[in-house]
Image 1 (cartoon, rainbow, N blue to C red):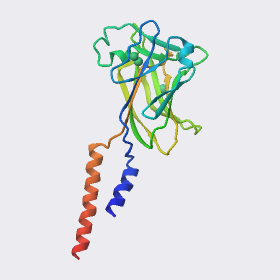
Image 2 (image 1 turned 120 degrees about the vertical axis):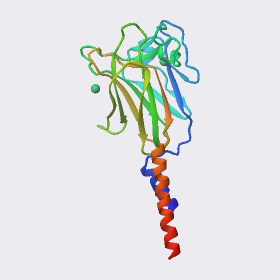
Image 3 (image 1 turned 180 degrees about the horizontal axis):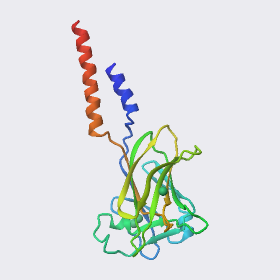
Image 4 (image 1 turned 135 degrees about the vertical axis):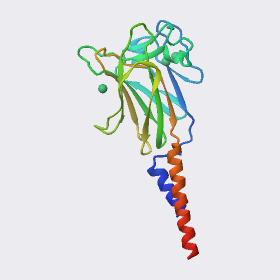
Length: 229
Ligand SMILES: [Ca+2]
Ligand SMILES: [Ca+2]
Ligand SMILES: [Ca+2]
C-alpha cells in the first residue's frame, strides 16, 4: 500500500523519471564573425543569412529534436562587448537567431519545436540578449501543445534582454506530445532574440521530498498502530 501511495504521489506531484542528462544548445551564427560555440553545448548553427535561418535543419540531441520556425529574420554574431567579455556564457551570448516585427507584423516570434521528450517536467533556461550597443528589447515566453489549438500559456511576460537566462518549467503530459516554445517580441522595440537554451529533467524540491517523507512516515505509523491492536 505504501508503495502504491508513493507511485501515485510521484505522478500527482509531477516528478519525472526521465533519466536523460541536461541538454544544452548554443544557437550559433556565422554572420559577420566566425562561429564560437559555448563549451559543453551542442551547436545549432543558423548560418549567416535570413534564408539560412529559415531553412536550418532540425537538431537532435539525446533523442530530442529541436526545430526552429516562425519566419526568422536571420542570425547575428556580435563582436564582444564589455558587458559579456569574460561572462561564463560569452560564446553563447554573442550569437543568436532573431525575428523582429515590422509595422505590419507586430508580435513576431521565434518558435522552437521540441519533439521526443519523455513524459515529465523539465526545467528550461533560455537566453535572450543582443551584444550590439544600444540594442535592447523584451520577449514574452510562451509554451503550447503543437496539436492543441488555444493551448498557449505565457510562462514569462515582459522579459527584457539580459545576459542572465530566464528560467521556467514545461511539462510533457503524454508520450509523443510535441511542445512549442515561442519567444515573442513584447515591447515597442519589436525585437526577439534566442541565443541558446538548457533543458533538464526537473528534480523534486527539498520541501516536496520532505513532505512526501513525512506522509510515508504517517502511513508507516498507521500500519504499526494497526499491527499492535
Ligand atoms: Ca555561439
Ligand atoms: Ca548563441
Ligand atoms: Ca506581454
